[in-house]
Length: 320
Image 1 (cartoon, rainbow, N blue to C red):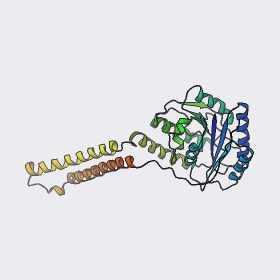
Image 2: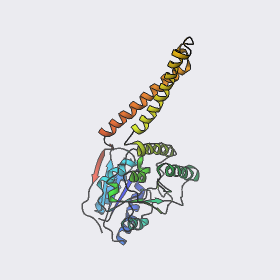
Image 3: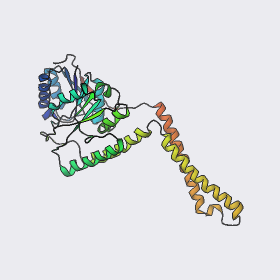
Image 4: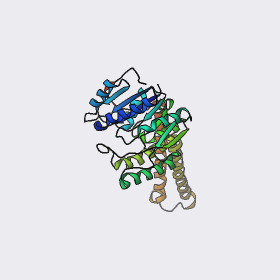
């Protein structure tokens, strides 16, 4: 199979049929063997009914419906487990991503040898104040922190070699950082393509301004996991040793001063250096213990991605 199209969605019943027909038109005109996998992330409208109807008409359509809303990362993870195509395309269901971009994305993966191509919505039709400006700030911070030189980390339109999606775990809210996850997994041939962004045609956006605050917190998380996720002792242990040495240094100074320099002076417990020494050694011991426990956890605990599937459509025949 050439292509698997993975489409996570939440309450997008108005756009699904139009999106499906558009994708099918592109697939047929390029003679692709394909599958379309819709992941219904706990929609409360008629999205699943529309998907079921599309699956009856088109045997290339498959569907997964979550019991409730678990998030886009979990939806993508569920889709990545099921895909069969050589190239995987992810896109949003709101018609803001253009299916006409798919053939070129496919070519860049298959012929140019990229592991991952991320879309770049250079010209956007969103609110400048509430989406464009925060997005630019967020992408700048992501580039600086991760070392992955992309202009638009959060673009839903991406193309992957199959081996990439089968070797990364997308959990929590990490769908924004799939290129970083791919880089950390050893897939460094990451490219970017300017793609057409379209104004939302139906419904309203499911993301508020809070997604940018969450995005920056997730950025800190993935920076830490990237650098120290497999070796937490290198961070906590190092700072623990530094703090303990500082505390021990103050304690040693107080002992020498009391025994040999000023034995008749104030009690050690009356001096501020005593509390600095005590606090530093306690913090140092706790940091070292945190690093040790982190090392034990990383050696015994596997990544977990939690979601509950309510229904699943699995069509076996593929379309050309």
